[in-house]
Length: 204
Image 1 (cartoon, rainbow, N blue to C red):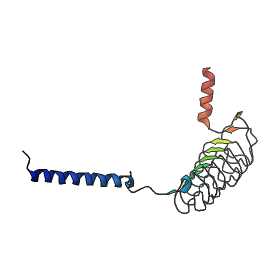
Image 2 (image 1 turned 180 degrees about the vertical axis):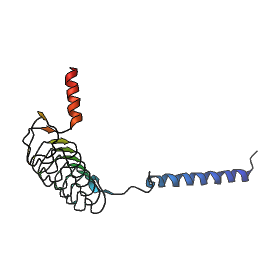
Image 3 (image 1 turned 90 degrees about the vertical axis):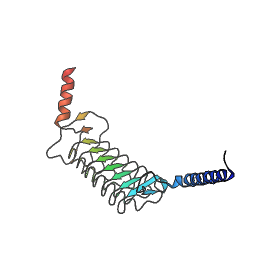
C-alpha cells in the first residue's frame, strides 16, 4: 500500500517529466535538421552562396546563385540558376541555367531560357534565347543565335548568330569551327552519336 509520501513523490516526478516534455516540444521547431544550420536563404525564394553572389537582386524571385559573382547583376530576374564562379554574371533575364565557371557569363536582358553546362559554355551569349550547350566551351562564341543545341567539348564553339528552328541536321564536331553556323539545327555529339545512329539505321 502506497504511503502519502510515495504518492507525493510520484506526483512531483510526473510533473517534472511533463515540464521537460513541454519544454522540448516548444523548442523543437527551432531545432535544425542538419548541423551546421543551412544558410543562404533570402526572401522571394532566392538562395545565394559565395562572394557577391546575387548581390544586386531587388525584386527577382526563385533564383539560385552559388559561386563567386554568380548572378552578380541580376535585379528582377526570376527562375535562374547559376552554379560556379561567374555563372550568369551579367544576367538580368529569366529562366536560365548555368553550371560551370563562366557559363553564360555575358548573358543580359533578353537572353531567356538558355541552358549551359560546362566551363565557359555559352560564355559570350548576350541576347540569344533557348540555346542548350553541354560541354566545356560549347557554343562559347554565340551572341544572339537562338534555339541551338550543342553537345560536346567546344561543340559549335564558333557559332555566333546562327539560328535553328527545327531538328534537321546532325553535324560532326569540327576541329576548327566556322565563324558562323548556317545549319538550321546542329546537334553535335561526335563519333559516338554517329555510330549509334548508323547502328540504329542498319538494324531496321
